[in-house]
Length: 176
Image (cartoon, rainbow, N blue to C red; front, side):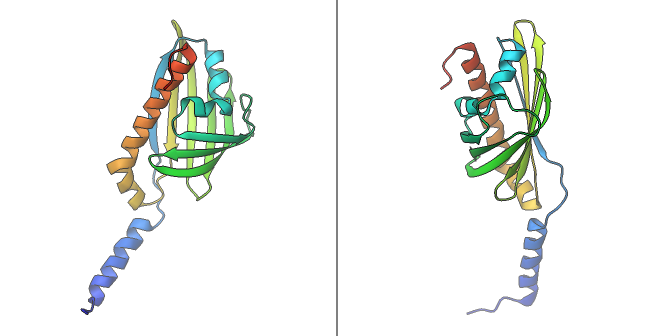
């Protein structure tokens, strides 16, 4: 069996430490928007009621806790999710609420990740402009690489599908 040169092993360990070391990086932001032919108050009530999330967001598998009403600042809800092939559980806490125009939740994933979702609703001719921002942490350079090559693309597609389903659900179309 060949011996690995000490320099090669040290280089490999150094690269691994560099890729996995926690670094203060700005989060990735996924922005989506859609115009929905419903009043802002109706859209707001629907999207801020967690029981509705699995009906329109493909990543939301199940919710638990306070799920039957539009959540207020400080309230929490648990969500089982599948995002970009990653299954997990997150606890969301409402951090901002200005009904029916703005709503923000911050989440902590059971395994240590984090994210934030912000909804902005604006009355427009014929309904509501619904804007959704999803920010998620990038804890290290390895995650940045995965995000650049695959994750961001998958999450962007899931978010676009979510808004397509939301529009269909609220306008009475098929939300398949």
